[in-house]
Image (cartoon, rainbow, N blue to C red; front, side, top):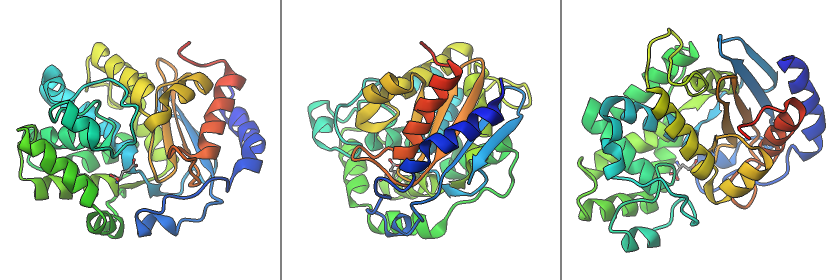
Length: 303
Ligand code: GLU
């Protein structure tokens, strides 16, 4: 497969869309990003990485980190995480509170904020330092020891974090959070603030295309767990637009408000695209279009 040629064709095709949509504005530190950025990378199973545009420029990974936290929790505790969080699409915005009350403090899935808070809480219990565990994992699997938290973004999230605090306290009242809420929120905000490039994330996500095997050949997840993470990405990974994303792209994907999207072709490759302009559901406009083009041009999809 000529990934480089495909990426260059995609960059030409989506050029008119770059700059469409709006960068996330709810955290001031994210609102200043240049909306005209676009990058895309593909990593194959052997760790060769191909890219176009701003594919080596770091951006705020945000909710994309939720995939990696879930994988680490599954690796530590197996199925026990599913006692604390469901795996159904929510049909509600990513930071919604209402559903939690109807469902007794058990969030619908690990990729809405409430669910991610529960998963980070599990990782904190397993490791004692959830955000560092995640950062180390991403450094190792991307082969980039320079990956770091962004203190300004984490601080900004914390200052504007009343909604996440409400979600965490609410779940704690149902006994679904084990650690002190302020410490949990800190780990969650640090986790969201990690800066990575398309190349870093495509490489770090490779275990999902390699049926659970890490870069060094050791196993993080069983084949079945890797399938589970991919399945939850497909059904819940792109906010309240997962149906539309599956329809257009046909791959497991996870987006973040920083404008990045990671996608997986099991058994073949991983992709990451970044462009900060978001549609009204919170997904990168040019990013979704680029992944849509990728599956059209290559015929690679899970369907
Ligand atoms: N840090 C963000 C929040 O919790 C994550 C948002 C996202 O990328 O979906 O609000």
